[in-house]
Image (cartoon, rainbow, N blue to C red; front, side, top):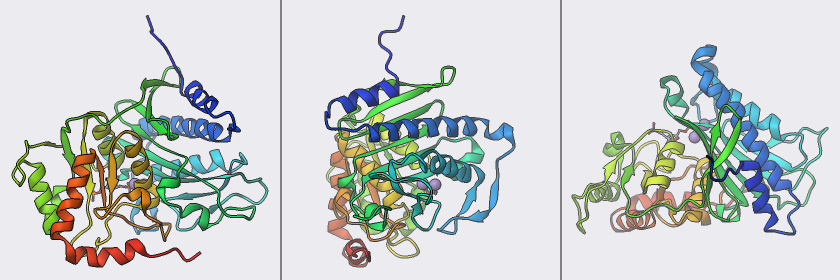
Length: 353
Ligand code: AHG
Ligand code: MN
Ligand code: MN
């Protein structure tokens, strides 16, 4: 027998009822993201069969090769949302500029940021991938959205979430009242509440980082890593190490089992500002971590408070267990003055609006 079944639709609606002034637009927007997730999930699970694996000819804004499913997922999300009159603009990791709402459709009071497929290098090897989304409220005064609506700090988000396409498909979201997870029942096509009010558990179990980059890491990051391994000062018991290479999956594991994920900047070399994207990856996870009792930092301070200056801004990321994130900041402040001097002006740059 089933104890209690809550679909994602009902859950989103119940949350909305707590705000008598809510108009239901955000609720509908989240429904639409759940529907887009089902369509993308259907394609990702059929990817091998449908013969759509492999790279397209094009590359994205970062010069990285796009996989066909990236393009597909990007279009599904755009088309799901371009005509609903809930958004004034969108922005996607796969597009250099702001995505305008087509002129023949009306606009609304939100702006949607998304990474259509995160971890796309894992597609061809059947490893979990995801979709990340974040929603800001429109702040500009004109009818159509502008960069000003997008370039807001994560502390202003009204909702954020992700979908993980793994051994099952899950959608995890927050509107600022807890973080909730839903598992897709493919036979019914419904997301059912499976993880209510998720809190990052204590004690932490894992650390997740690409240790292959240790040769380009700063002294602080190397010492931090040793410390997580139980080899540093102050003494601590060693954590297990897990790294998938899809931030969605690495974050998801630490959210459910406890731990820290980090993708630091290089001390020298090509990634002195980090690799991950502030607007399409880090903001959503900063918001979710915070609402699950965790933290997210760029090594200098909370990512929630960073005023973005560019749509495709990069950021070093330390996210998960609050104490482990604080400890990363500690090591960086103690050992990485030189790197901080390079990174700080980038972090503090103001948007040119
Ligand atoms: P995307 O597939 O959207 O470009 O993002 C991949 C990101 C992130 O998901 C992951 O944590 C990281 O890149 C992995 O990078 P490395 O392969 O350098 O470890
Ligand atoms: Mn990504
Ligand atoms: Mn991507």
